[in-house]
Length: 99
Image 1 (cartoon, rainbow, N blue to C red):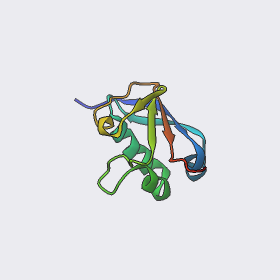
Image 2: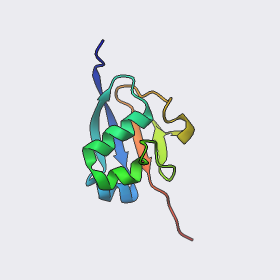
Image 3: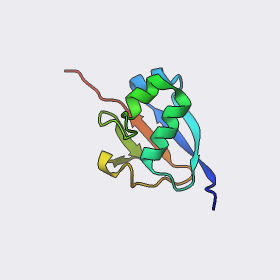
């Protein structure tokens, strides 16, 4: 059985917005895809520079990026198991430093 695509909304914050070239995008992902799967899809669509910031060489979520789905924090350990639904908002927030 072939998986149907669904659309999610991806919001890029701070430096990620600059690298992606947009603050928000509608991205088509397979039905019942995990946050980790969505990150790999986003990385493939937006190019190598953003990919380096989102996923590791083995395709896992970069630990430095904060992940939120519909305003709920997603732990990196759960990124491969947290399934997205059509219309979900995936917020990607880079690390913040300062003093």
